[in-house]
Length: 316
Image (cartoon, rainbow, N blue to C red; front, side, top):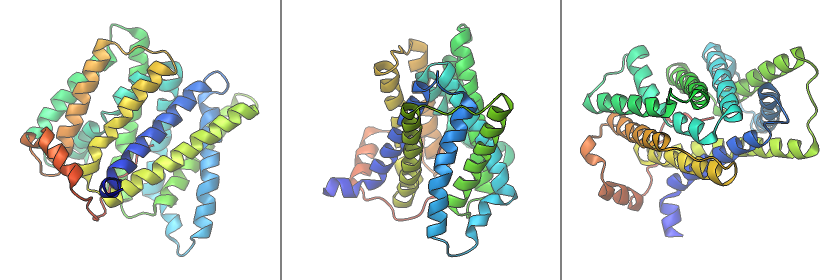
């Protein structure tokens, strides 16, 4: 029990990545039942319903309006783009490919911070950018048209997500978390409902598909809460490497559930992307390349999580 309490931040991050992997797997399972926009509509409606109840129950001030300010609306628009492209990627292609590309998020956040927010670069960050670029190119695999299209959609999703995180850092870092989640859910409902209605009547899912969608929405909520809790209990440097457990979970799901076989280029690219992410995280927190060793990992697991609130915006 002491070990669990001492490393609660890490376990929360692992739980979050596991929940997001379950969500991705469920979305792929109902691929033939609903379109991308139908999935966005129903899943977001379920999430918005729960968040709405929470906002009503904890209503204490006007902070719920922060998600509907200019920065919150821009963040919601970027999140819609990220959700639409990522759901399409896992519907039309391999889950393992989309998951591998999504791990390049810290890399593009660092690049966006330098280009758009004027953040300074250093040697480790430059090394990380080179490693990440090489890894993404390996995963994209332009010699395979099918794999390349899936990876390209996932890459566009990562760009949208990086933009969302940069907007959060610049305009919404003090905003109410539930308010931001509500504005995002409403934006997805509007897009999914509008497109589905324009292409015909919004289909009514079967009971089995409805239960799967409810499970996906529940996974998103639990993952969202877990990743916020992880950021409250531990520092960014301590918990961020455990985000990459999601790639391991996705590979297992892709192989055992969907019968996918990740090729050597995908695995090699994934390793480079993970290394790039770890170097980026260390560089952004004053670390160095020399700190990437097994002893530091073991020492961190023995060190209680910091109580300092780390402003780490959660993934979708």
